[in-house]
Image (cartoon, rainbow, N blue to C red; front, top):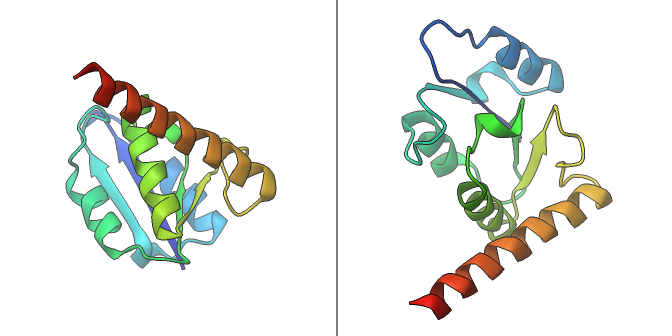
Length: 126
């Protein structure tokens, strides 16, 4: 099952472009979650709701990577969680970040490695 996520930071921004791209990709409207909040915020109501529903074998689809995470650490954390839970990830605007393909799985694995490295560095420094 496909789940989509869209986000805008400012009230003046629109979600139409993102929502249209998710629908065109094949995400059903009922499975699209959107927030109107800064991407720097880790806790986002509808992202958290989506993450509570998505499960093994599902695909998390976003229009653009920065709609999901605005920091490497947040992205690495999400990617590690997806990898651990058997969830694929697709960024429509960044086709190299598509774990439904072999190349995308390779990139995904690299991000997971970065997350693990970051964790090891934090542990050793404290």
